[in-house]
Amino acid sequence: MNTPLTGRTLVVTRAADQAPELIRQLTDLGATVVALPVSNIVDPADGGAALKTALTQATQYDWIIATSPNGAQRLARSLTDLPAHTRLAAVGPQTAKPLTDAGWLVDFVPQSFVADALVAEFPTGPGRALWVRAETARPTLADGLQAAGWQVDQIVAYRNTETPVDPTVLATAQSADAVLFTSASSVERYRKLSAQPQPAVALCLGPVTADAAQKHGFETHQATESSVAGLLDLAQQWATG
Image (cartoon, rainbow, N blue to C red):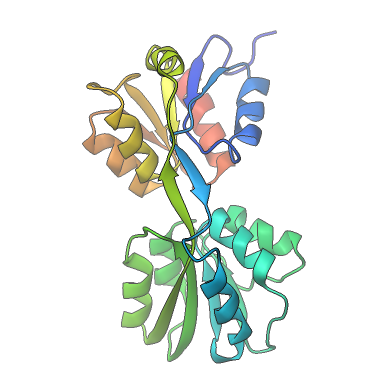
C-alpha cells in the first residue's frame, strides 16, 4: 500500500534521544529514514545547579519561560514547587508538554510557536522573568521582553554539542531525497560535513532554521506550524506536490 512518503528517503538530523518518535512517524508514512544525529543534548557545565538554585528563589519571578523541549524537560525535573503568583510560559505545545506531563499548568503559549511570537504576544511588564535556555541562544527573547518592561534573568539548562558522524551513514544521507532540520545549529553542523548541500532539499522547522538552510544553499521548505506535526505535514506536502 502506497503512503504519502513511499519511495522517499529522508535524513533526520535530530539528537539520537529525540529522534525516535519522528523517525517512527516518517516510517509509518512510508519513508526510508537515515538517522544522522549531528548533535548531543547534554547538561550544562554546572550539572544544572544554577537552575535548581534559581527555582528555590522562584518567589521573585512573575514568569518562568521555556523556549525548547530540552529546557522544559530540565525545568520539569527540577521544579518542586511553584509560588501562586508565578506562572509558566512555553514557546509552543511541544515545549509545554514536559511541564504539563509533570502536572504543571502552562499559562501562556503564543499563537505561533517561535520566540518572536512569544515576545510579540507576551503581557507587558513591569515584572521579573526567568528564561530557561540553551547555552547558545539568540538574544531575541531577552531583548524583546526587556523592551516590554521585564527584567529577564537567564539560566543555562543544557548544551547542544557536536557528535561524531559515521562516514558510511553520511554517504547514504547525502544521496537521500531530503534532509529534515529542526534547528539552525543542525543546519550549520550538517553543512560542515559536505562541500555541497546534499541532498539539495531541506525541510525545516521554524523560520530561523529555514533561514539558515537557505543561506547554506538548500532548496528550502518551511513547515507552516513550528512543531513535529507541522514538519510531518510539510514532508507529505513536499512529497506529493
